[in-house]
Amino acid sequence: MFELRDLIAKELAEPVDPRVAAFAESIAAKHGDSSRAVLFYGSCLRERELDGLMLDFYLIVSDYRAAYGKSWLAAANRLIPPNVFYFEHEDLRCKYAVLSEEDLARYCSTEAPDLSVIARFSQPLRLVWVAGHGARLQVESAVASAPAVLAAITMPMLGEGETNDPLNVWRRAFELTYGTELRAERKERPGSIVERDASFYRTMTKALPNLATASNGEPTWKRFRFRGKRAQIMRLAKASFTFAGGADYIAWKINRHAGTDIKLKAWQRRWPLLAAISLLPRLLRTGAVR
Image (cartoon, rainbow, N blue to C red; front, side, top):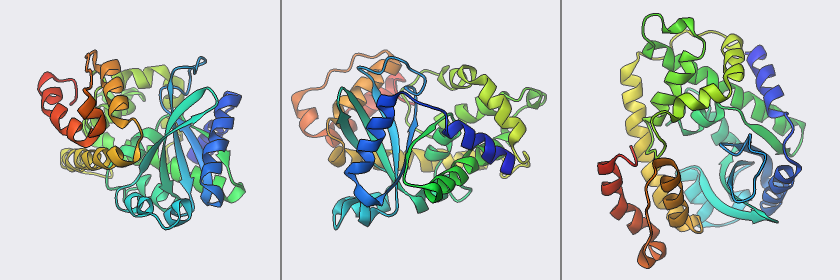
């Protein structure tokens, strides 16, 4: 996998807006010596105008106890990773997820309990802060595993003739991974992810060690659909206690991607978990969330 790892290492090292790098440094400082790396990902990655947007980061830590001290947050992060927090730095805002180095490696591998990290880390991302060379090598190794695993389990789901186009494996992969989560984005969103960075995905397909199947097709994805949606519900419930303004953020994201006009009531802001439970049936019925 050295060729793929070299490609991923190059992608991770691409420069970013200096404000993003400063933001990442402030996130790392918040968790002290436990901080090992900060990854920047998501829809803001290629945006030039960042004001008014919600940036997305992953903070990688040595372990959860070191990151939080003797806190229930460490237990919550260990039981249902990752924890997600809201944070502001100067004129920018973000949400950042916290994973330990051990969980990063597991969630990018064939041992991953769901595909949330694999799907995100199979897309372009940047290593915007790192504690040192050893931490960089660990991140590069873990991230390089993600697209290899995703491509291998997707190949059995391609139809006859679809393998002729190297982009088809990624179009199908993101279509399938969106089906494993509660998603507000429109149906064309998985394809647009690939088209936006088509050159990256073509190069990555060539760099894959092989595309030998690692699954028997639909049963594998059926299992991930069940696990993924169950895990996401648990994470959303946990986020209602850890993510400041979580209910407003979820409503904003659904409105943005699904074209809805959800307006939260005062009690829904006070009790975000109950708000999520009360909204979910309507969102599923109308197709705003799938």
